[in-house]
Image 1 (cartoon, one colour):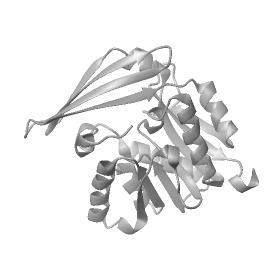
Image 2: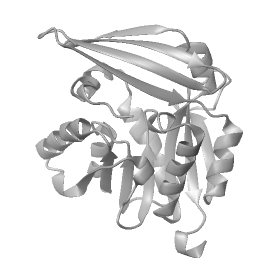
Image 3: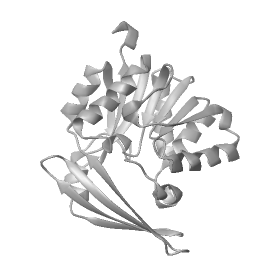
Image 4: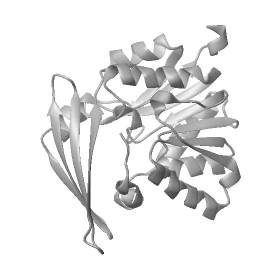
Length: 252
């Protein structure tokens, strides 16, 4: 899954996202585990709002996305902020991840890992993150919940009306596979041009996620609601996981 033309409208259409709250939560979890500097990978960094904030906090950030359009937007932002030297941008599929060395932490937000599935691909992405993680390294990622797929997205059509673009997306849910197919249409208000993309998400139950983290050497140290960062509720629409790596790949 890759966002292409969507990249140029992403920030405007995602304006309601509370990046400050997300940044505070992420950095608090990292600090609690003693990760206050060093190399951090943002897996599926998109246009890089969180990437830039983490670089400004002193981390050496690797921003990874398979959309060149997303990386281009992020590159321009980094140049404007004078952060080019603190951010390495890599165009990669998370299923073929190659970081050329170890990292102290990885973050992945705004449902990147929800898009990776089905289950064997989701497992491979976790395995790849684990492969490059130092002992004591922190892995923070979020997922849309089964509740959101079944009760919020299934069979629904949504619209976002921003200054420059109108976004409309329709969701089709398959209960047997936990899969949601999303047909996205974005209309540029100035030019009238319309771009269309189809993306897919998958839902996983908590026991499955916990088992996969454990299989690849992670201990889940915190699970929170991924939107208000409080306790998980039955109607939570997003989970955010904080996991700690128990050993390096060489020690396995």
